Image (tube, rainbow, N blue to C red):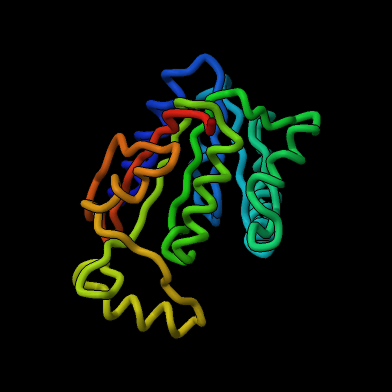
Length: 212
């Protein structure tokens, strides 16, 4: 869909502008972005961080299909509800295939923010900022917010019923026109927005400063 095309384009352009970089996909699920791009961009290291339940199924499927991730792609099982992003990536900085917090990094968060509380969303961006240098980016999707409820267009009511039926709940959304204000007191600046790409809105933010 349009959302995936937007995210794919942002990631490709980021990589092409760097000599070396890192791509981190949070909550990757069954998305194939890292699998597809890692053979094309050997100058980038790709990291997938996903809940153990999903990561185990994905890795088993890759094994059954005879697909071996390239040596610049690292698949990690981690429950970020129990271990923070910053703590986990700090632990990986000590490994042989180490995460380097001094190298420009783009973080992908697709289908994630709407399931987090606002404080958790803010905290996640703060953690990413603590582990990346200025000029790093985050590309993400989010639901809108209108008339006191999360908004994904004409599908809102149906989607609420579907999500509720599987025991999940939407928790955070923001009107695209309020996104710059949301990041105003952070180390991030909105550099690109693509409202209403299907059910969600997409945006890209760039880290503009280190904390003083």
